[in-house]
Amino acid sequence: MADGEITLKLDAETVRKLQRAAAEAGVSMETKGAEILADGLADAEGWAIVAERLEEFDRTGEARPANEVLAEFRARIEARLAGRS
Image (cartoon, rainbow, N blue to C red; front, side, top):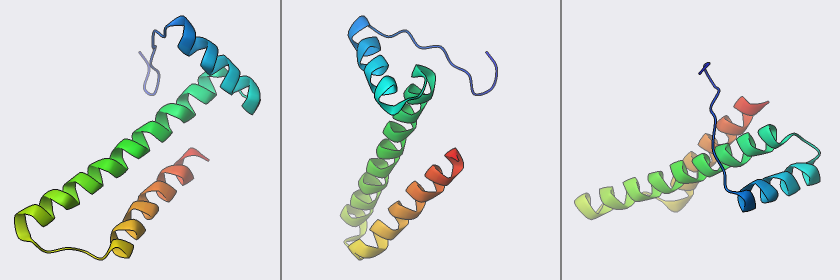
């Protein structure tokens, strides 16, 4: 397997959904699948940050302002999106 290349086995219903999404976006299934996967991973990373902050609060009782945490999350998302261009 080359760097950045992966093969996934999908059930028929998932393939149909991916085909539909790709057709609607006017891109290949590979492109749309990669986009969906990247978005899902970014979401997972965002929730990991939330969980990390909650654990920190539970441990220390110290909170960070929501706007600070959201700005950090937004910056990470924007960096990921910029990397796709």
